[in-house]
Image (cartoon, rainbow, N blue to C red; front, side, top):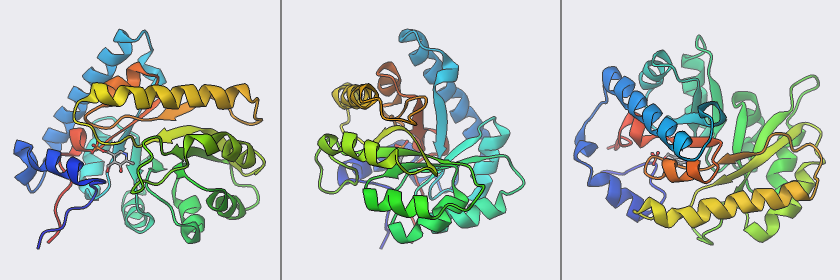
Length: 261
Ligand SMILES: Cc1ncc(COP(=O)(O)O)c(C=O)c1O
């Protein structure tokens, strides 16, 4: 039986399975380069449309389930930021790619008992969804290490299957996190419900931006530049128009995530 990894909902899975390239066993490095060029053009166009500067949007290539060679190809094509969702999988890739200068982002749910390895491996954690996890991440710091930039994952769709704190709890969590000296709260992260028409996702992106503004107005100390991590392959342009500072793009760069037998 074939199992698919990386699809957060059956609708997302159906959408990607229907793409013509879904059966390609391997995406060659030339294709990755072309895909990146295309994504870059689309990011730039979305920035222009919304009067934003290209350098204000960070492209995080979501490499989960893809092999280190694909990441290497993406680095050769100019990318520096990569997103993984599992500590164990990332650990092996990070060690195989230790010769490259990569900023690693944890974008998937983190169990608090993996806080220590996550802190050792990743430069950013996008998926802080509880005070307990924040506490564990904070305790995992070692003297002299840099503060760890973290984002609070917010569940705006109210979907039980998704991680993240409800919007109503985000301000309180931001305040609590700001008291941990080894964490640097940098903003919010969103995985919206999967809706095929990206325009239908716009209200969620907008809501996250408004929520970030509310948190900012609380004058919670230590929130530096406000980051909004939102936008994936099929909706990142809308996310940029709504203020995304980090877009997390997997499929549009590496192709559909491979099935494992
Ligand atoms: C948290 C998160 N962000 C971004 C992505 C990238 O999604 P896509 O392949 O649609 O670009 C994934 C993929 O599973 C994800 O889990």
